[in-house]
Length: 199
Image (cartoon, rainbow, N blue to C red; front, top):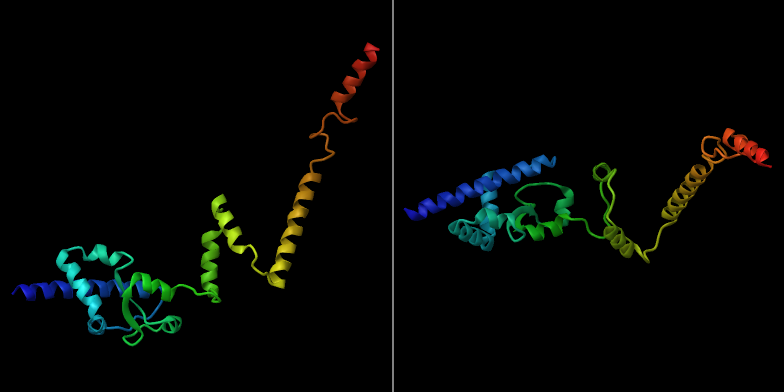
């Protein structure tokens, strides 16, 4: 009787995990083509992970464990299946959250999709980096070769920056409101008159 009750708890917990995975993937705009029975079959293939999960459910700390980096998630088998973005019983497996990030995160030489670039641009617009972050970025980029296109963009940005500085330094110069002591100002003329009287 106790075994039946425990298996019911395990099944209920996995059903909650299935619903969470489905909600997350569909929230990312992907088609989640896995039934709950197929989800259970994926877990049964991952015997070690299922045994550990059962232990955590028995210890009543399954949710805390699964939320950690060592917790288990439904994720792609490899980078190729991740790029294809097809979610079904053949492309997915159970891995730790840490290993899932290695599969899903970008690797050297890969580039963001245009829609991802736009999201990053919107999120970063108006934000500034702290001095420590700037220093870290500088160290990381130091010695890295730059393409001709990158150099051209840097040159154009520098020229525009210098042009703005020149404009800012020249615009307020020579105006009576900024410099009241020029030859045409009333203050200067009155001063000259007082000097004449003294003489």
